[in-house]
Length: 299
Ligand code: SPV
Ligand code: MG
Image (cartoon, rainbow, N blue to C red; front, top):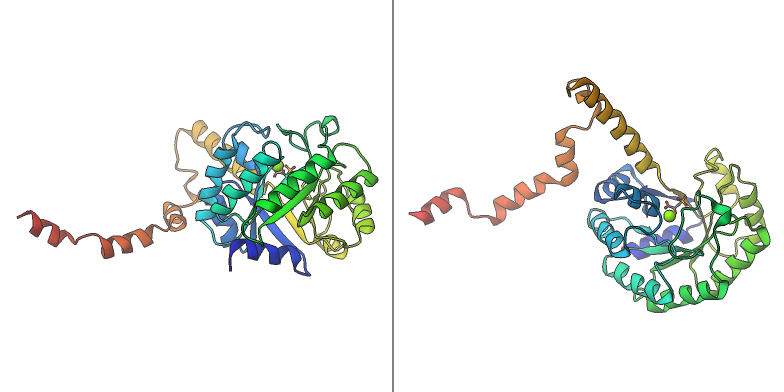
């Protein structure tokens, strides 16, 4: 099944599903192998992996290049964290065109201003997009997609920016009516209270996606009870790799030897397996002239 259709099924299925963060081809492949049905191409993690801030310092085409590697390395759908759509409706609709060409299943855009700031940094000082302007952006994206199943997820930053439930509901309803396929309700609260209040008022009107990075201690069962459709584990591969790389680099630096890390890092064979090195060896046998024939040709 096409990746966009797979993701549409995930969003509309009656049970809770999960997307796991990845930020390059390798991490995307690891997410698929772990068993996840979909991938969150996190803006925070992709920018961090490129050594820049989550403020649109990497250009949108640089993000697109990373996504191309992620998409090529996997068969499960990818939802891009498309920040604000990298500009106005025109930039956002061109983004959709380019994403579909790379078999990206959908994109999430947030109702903030370009250049964006990460939701967990100084959140309350962050201005929100004008509702009408953001709705125009959603409409332009939906009008542009060629595949009916491509998904546009509208992310509401009302709670992040310190507005209350009423604003969160008003925006969600406007984005739903503008054609968004799902609402991502974001929260930086350490508990799930504001999300619960939203879910109760929203009453299953349209699919809901959550990112419980800050309210991580909420039992997963609670998301099910509330009728949440998709939960995104948004940055844990990036955080895991930072911790592992810091530990390994420091140990090798301190010890001026690699002997003590050998048992705690992935083997070379594991890298080759993930890269599918064996497939190339087989293809070489099939497609390259044999060495015997080559030396014969030379005589
Ligand atoms: C990201 O992963 O880049 C997100 C989610 O946008 S968060 O950082 O939690 O806002
Ligand atoms: Mg982001």
